[in-house]
Image (cartoon, rainbow, N blue to C red; front, side, top):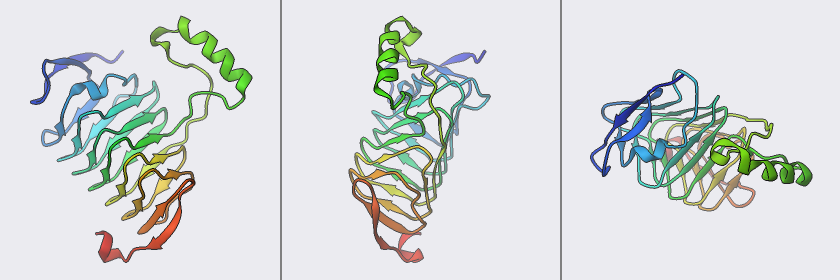
Length: 198
């Protein structure tokens, strides 16, 4: 069983119990430990925040029992929602704008009958969390990536180094390095020269 420790960060009103498997570099910035309230991972390291990374107000890391999130050096999560039942990795110097969603799992069946059965069971489950069998596929975000506001990255996607995802895009397929994508579903808009993205 993973223990908890009361932790308080400069912007928090009061100390909040935070799981001991959440590793925060001393130079990382967190607006509130509340961002980790939905972490339920039983892995030895559930969340790891690199040097100079920032988890800003409104960000929630919803990490399931077998999930893991890694955030690289000087990356910024700004009011984002990460759903990790397998793994989400975010490289160095990556920026995620307001209301970005990264989800490595849908957590509910696609078949409407099975979804209905799961919704009927929710009131009896601890924390009202879904326990429907659903495949999780890791998400990997590279270095120097910029994800625009309200974009959504779906299970199994890899976003290459130096890429840009346009605002409100839905990313369903891998994004090659140094590529701007936009739309629903996201499609390439143009290639960047390496020096433009570094």
